[in-house]
Each structure stands twice: as C-alpha cells, then as structure tokens.
Image (cartoon, one colour):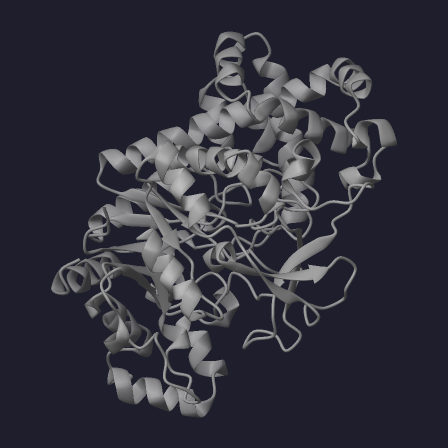
Length: 492
C-alpha cells in the first residue's frame, strides 16, 4: 500500500562514476544516502534488462535477465576476481556526462570476461544454486546469448534453421559446443543479481523502496520470442505477423512503430497466463513497486501489419483485460503495481484501470495543452494516482519551457503562479508535491533545473538516447536540504 510520499526518478545508467556508465557500486549507495537525507521514500528506475541495438531499456534481449553493464568492477576487485590494473586505464568513454555504449560494449564486456575466467571454480557452489533457482529462464537466456556471439550478433531469426527452430538435436549440440560461453553468461547473471540484491537491501533497510519498470512488450530479437514462440503471433518462419505501436498523437504524426511482436493472447489464456505471471513474479522480487509500461495495452492495443513503415495503418484490438490481472492476483496475491495509463484513454481503459485498483499516472507537462481541458491538471486528480512533472520520454521541465508553445507556457505560469524568483522548475515541483496524488515522483533533472541537454529519450528516434549521466558535484548539501524542506512542507 503506497502512502502519501515522494521519490526521485533516475536510471542506473545515469549514476556518476569512473567507468563510463552507472553501476551497482559505491555511487548507487551514495544516491540512496542522498534520497534518505532529502526525505524521499522511493527511487524509481527504468527496466534493468540487457539492452541491444539502440540501447533502449524497453527493447531487451530478455524479460527476466539483468543488464551486465551495471555490474560494478570495483566490487569484483574487492571479491578477489578482478585486478584493478586490468580495468583502471581502459577507455570506457571520454565524456563523464554521457554514456558511450559502443565503448561499454567493446571494453567493459572484455573486462567482465576476465573476471569470469578468474572466478572459475571459486563460485561453483553459489552459481549452481543460482542456476537451480532461476532454471525457468536462465539456461535458455545463456544459450541464446552464446548463440548470438557465435552468429555475429545476428537476430535469432537469421540463425541456421535447426537452432532457429530449436530442434532438440541442435539444442544438445550447441549446449556442448558453447559450454564455456554459456557458463560466462550465467556468471554475469549471478553477479548482476548478487550486486542488485545488495543495493536493494541497503535501500530497504534505510526506508527507501525501489520502483522498477517493465515494458509491456518483448523485443523481436529476444530469448523470449525464441524460447517461448507460442506466446507471440509469429508465422512459420518465426517472423512477426503483427507488431506493436501506437496511433498518431502529440509525439508523432505517423504514430509510433515499436515493432515488437503482438502477444498470442488466446494461447496465453489457455495456459492460465503462465508466462506473464512468472514475469510479474520475477519483477516483484527485484522491485518493491512495479510500473508496467503502456498499461492501456492490456485493455486494447494498436496492432500494425509486420513490414509497414509507419503505425498509421494499424487498428485497435481488445486485450485480455481483467482476466489477466485476476489470474495474477489469484496466484501472486497483492502485487504493488503502477499502471502507466498515458496516451489515448477511452472510457473502457479508464474503467479497466479502476477495476484493477492500481494507481494511474498524471504528467504535469501534459496538463497545459490549451487546445482542450486536461485530466492532468491537479484540480482533476483523485488520490489514487502517481504524479510526475515528466517521465523519461519527456523533456526536463526547463527544456519544456524552451520548446512548448507560448500559449501552453503562459497557461502554466498563470495556473501554477510561476515566477523566476522561485524558479520555474521549483514551481512545477511545488505543484506535484502539493497535489492530492498519493505519490509524487520527480526526475532528478528537474530538481537540478536542467534543460533538453539532459533529456533521456525522444520517442520514435534511435540513437543519442539513454545517455545522460549525473555529475557527482550536482548533489550537494544545499540541494538536499531544499528537497527535504519542500517534501516535509507538503506532508510527503
């Protein structure tokens, strides 16, 4: 049960640090210490899955595995399986404020392989236990990643026919041929979950809960679609028949073509929604609260014929609705979920979200569209919601001030009584924290008053996203005390 409280949104990648990308090391603990001193109760992050082309956490190779980029090298050093001389002079990226994913992929993964070689036999008992506990997904994932390495990172639909179609003889053959490589990928997952568990335990012991995030869809090139093909609408060649997206909206005149395969909801229903239940079960161990992205897609979703260049020629199709979430509640009991119910909302979608009991989302940057009355204006809120100034898909608020229409900006100034002395970003923060929403989550960029240069993602674009990083000196005592004061002022 979420009580009146507040938190800060910042992904692991954005943590400061020496080695090119945020990790589960010292800076993660420092950030938790900052949240405690700032009077916060939640740390919201983006999906933790391993990322592929485009580096988007919403296009992961697995719905169950973790991203090895987040493994901290200094922890491996203190564990005695990685000498500091191996990695302290390696180029992980020259810009401390942006992740260079190309260098992380080339250089960090090479260092992690050395750590694996040094760990052989040392962790056998622990890794065997880890394998047994995660056998539902781990063996398939490790084989899949080993095969991707063998086939030059090609999508699995381009692999040799026998292994693409998962013939038993091919599975057996490659499990023997790639044994060492498979064990490397299992080691990485062991380290990921060990280090993340320590971070989460530290946060929870100190009164900070983690809000995680899971994408509604699985990536086309993922172990999910390869090892659980029946779950998705694929043709006999294992290509998608229909793909996901959303219709034309304020973000894009041609809609958003995400390209993920659509679920075979009839098949999933015949299994009692087993795959989804196991996915939510797994995430409930990783996070205290799980935000499900594009939640409205469970009521109805936009499907587009595979091969189309845009999302324009799609159509709305009914999803599983309450049948899925009744099955989840029956098996897992109460799971803390935030429903990302943004986008085009029909009465059916609104009623569906209310029926689940899960809090929806309100985004203040969407509130001041002068063309229409908005449900995102604070006077329209009920308590069972989570308010944001913006999410990872939005401009930080100071960027919004630069790029939004003059009419919308003027409306926000009038409605929120904004002024330069307080700071426009702090006026929006005041609005979010003072609202009746039971939870308020603010991007760290908005507390820092940063603009478009600090934006995490521009929807419908590939490249240049998910790169922004916090500077260590950005978090100081003055800011911490200011956040603490305004949080207490509004009873959060």
